[in-house]
Length: 390
Image 1: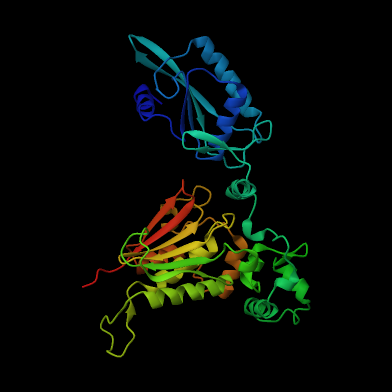
Image 2: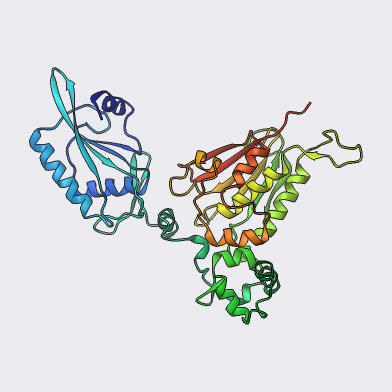
C-alpha cells in the first residue's frame, strides 16, 4: 500500500473493515479486534492514527518494532491462529514523515475464531460485538463448512414424526425398489438416508418427510403477500399475508400455485380460450422458488418471504451467500452447497435441473432478474420486474 492509497482509506473514516488506533491497545483488545475481523469480512488496523478523528499521529521506529512483535504474538495465540501481514507506510505531514503500521487481516476460512479466553467476536459497523447466541455461533461454523444445518438432529423428534408413506414413495423414486425389497426395515432405511440419527430426525428428514414440520420448526414457512402499489409500507393488500406450511415439496407446490393465481396471464398469440402465458417465465419462477427452499440458511430462524408488488416480485431468503460466493459466481453456475442433504432429496422430489444450473436457466428465460446478496442484512434477495400494463 502506498501513501496515497492509505490517505484515501483514512479519509473514509472507521468502518467494519477499517480501525484506527493511536497506539497499540491492550493485548486483549487487539485479540478481540483481530478475531472480529477474521470472523467477518477481514480488514485493516491502522496504528498511528487517532481514533475517530483520523488525525495522523505516527509511530517511532521503536514503537513499530514493539507493536509488530506484540500483534504477531497475539494472532498466534488465537484459536485457531490467525495469519496476519504487517507493513509500514510513510506519510508526509507537517514537513515530516510519519510512520503508520498497517495490520492486514483476511476473512478467515476456519470460523469461528476465538480469543485465548474462548470469546467469539464479530464486526458490527465500526464496532465489534461479542457473540453469545448459539444460532449465530453455529452459522460461523457453517460458513467454514464445519457444520451443516440440514444434517443436524432436531431435538425432541422421533421416528413417530415421519410420514412413512411419504418416505416410502421417495425411496422407490430414488432406488426403483422399496426398502423392504432391499432387505431393510423402515428404521434402517431412515438411518441409511440420514433421516434418522441417534433416534431423532435430522432437519432435512423433518423438512422433506415430516408429518407436520412447522409444528416443530414454526419459522420454516414461506410468508406470501400481494400488495397494491410498489411499497412494503402499504397496508392495502390484494391478498393478506399468509404463511405457507408443509414439507419442502409441498411448500414449492403451494408457492407456485400462489404465483400463478396472483400474476397476470397474457394471450401472447395463443388461442382466445387459452388460459394464456404467465407474465413472468414459469421456468424462472420454478428455479428461483426451488433455490430459495433448498439453499437458504436454515440456521436463521425466519421464513422465506414471497412479495408481489405491481411492478415486481421479490423472493427473500434468510442468509447471505455462503463461503464468499458472489452473485457473479452463481450467475455462471459456480455453486457452493450449503445444504447437502436437501440437495440430494430435491433431485428426486422437485423439478431440480442440476447443481449450479438453476440460476443460469432462470436468467436464460428471464434475463432481467436482479440478485442482491445483502451481507449486512444476512439475506439474499431476488427481484423480478413485472411487465408494464398497457
